[in-house]
Length: 74
Image 1 (cartoon, rainbow, N blue to C red):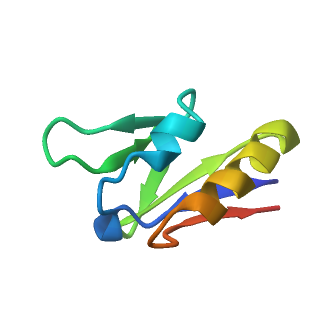
Image 2 (image 1 turned 60 degrees about the vertical axis):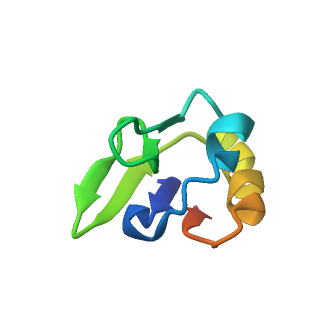
């Protein structure tokens, strides 16, 4: 199944993911980093299973991420 992988510990808080795909991302008020909504945390990595439509949008988000900590695979 397609998924989005987010390496949150390396996030710099630029908010481009939230701006491009607000239905899946929020910016934390605690630390200013991005949060992948509904994701499961696995060893400091956040993983969210998605459908193919969201995957295609997420690929654009992953390309736009300045620190390349978002992966859209599937």
